[in-house]
Image 1 (cartoon, rainbow, N blue to C red):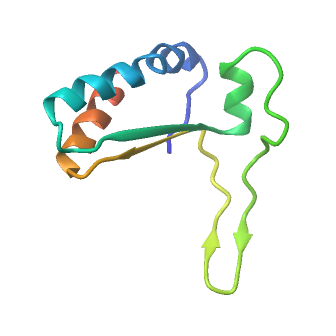
Image 2: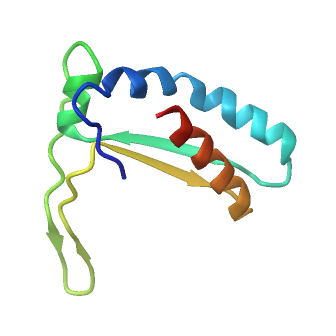
Length: 101
C-alpha cells in the first residue's frame, strides 16, 4: 500500500499503462513464475488520478471487526498486489515499479 504525495499523480498515471507490458516481459524471462498483479485505488486517490465520475460503490475503506478477524481502516492511495510462484520475481517487479515512482 502506498501513498501518493501531492504532485505525484502524474508519475502514478505514467506507470499504470506499463503494468501489462512489464508483466509480459517478466513472464518471458520467468515463464514458470505464474506472475500476476492487481492494482487498487483508494477513494480519494481515484478523484486525483482519473477524470469523470468515480465508481458508484467506491468509498473510504472502513474498519471491519469480526469475531475472529480485524481489518483496520487503511489510509493508502494505491495497492499493488503482486503475486508469483517465485518471490524473487515479485521483488523484481516491485523494484521496477518503485524505480519509476
